[in-house]
Image (cartoon, rainbow, N blue to C red):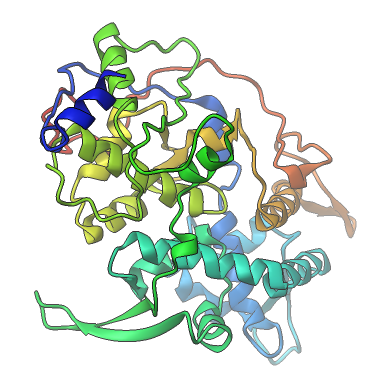
Amino acid sequence: MLSMELWRRFPHRLLLIRSFVDARIKWVRDPYLDIAVEREKNLKEILSLKNQILSSPSKSLPLSSLSPLKSHFNLPTSTSKLFQNYPSIFFPFQPSPSLPLHVKLTPQAMTLHKEELAIHNSPPHRNDVVNRLAKLLMLTKAGRLPLHILDKFKFDLGLPTNYITFLLSDCPDYFQICEYKNPSDGKETLFLELISWRNELAISEMEKRASFSDSVKLKKGLPLRFSMKLPNGFDLEKKVKNWVDTWQDLPYISPYENSFHLGPNSDQAEKWTVAVLHELLWLLVSKKTEGKNVFCLGEYLGFENRFKKAVMHFPGIFYVSNKIRTQTVVLKEAYRKDFLMEKHPLMGMRFRYIHLMNKSEKFRKRDGVPVFRRKRKVMSNADKGEVIKEDKNVEENKDLNLLSGSGSKDGF
């Protein structure tokens, strides 16, 4: 506990010390977490199209009106092709000979949607949404976020489609929409703002765990250690391992505290940065999000490229997957192999959508009878997210373009 002794004797010195060793930490592929990410291929896009169709009073839309939405929803292919690929979700029909081809949801998809809607409307879930969103805004220190940044996390936070209307009508004492002028370009930007700080929510997941421990009392400055899960066959160099052990013993600073006074390149500042990123990912229902979302938020909060460095320096805490046409940052401790350990009700619903999507990957009609041919086996309890897939060996990930060129001077 040398770090704690130094903290007590010379607290001001630890604000500036940077001791990260000049060693290269190899980034390796984790096949299980890749499965967890790849499992949700096209899910977000399918659900976006579903909600767009159901926004119509007739619960259907002309195919021609959906075609321009390819770029808006970041679709991997044209809408017509996507509908063909998922006939167990979407059903094309012609209302009358004089009208163009329309699309609506299949009965199975409508059933799932109604169950999903019931979750969104349930008081426990609405309270959960309010608390998680309030905690996210509290991470910003100013208590507000531009709506265009918040929308990037809308899916990962599990927010309903009409979350702004819901928040303003149900929680007028908690949230408000405000407008601020950007000093750089003078443009007005809409923000969601937390009206007042909520002390009862300013406790991180790390602190919550410590408070439940019999051997640890919750107080500031404790050397709380992050869970480190390195892939099988992956070993840190001895000097890196020694540095990580010393770094873990540094005092834990709550992500809800403003610690930008710390020297930005100090070990203590890096531990606080990891704490903020850890809490951010923990607030998400799937404990993961696209890398571009993480780094966009980091830049807005004033961390610049420190989120990127934290992901690079600690492969035992964070993982970056290159699957499904993007890069996804995953909180490793939230998963056991490819299974999410703490299931949110919305994740159970999403796995049921995935189960239905997988049924239609090789769907075709033979003599008017629906026939399903599965691309891969999906276990009967798919709502638990369990997918049978052949094991792979862990291999070195050589394709982390997002992380390369980060400007780090620490040997990466």
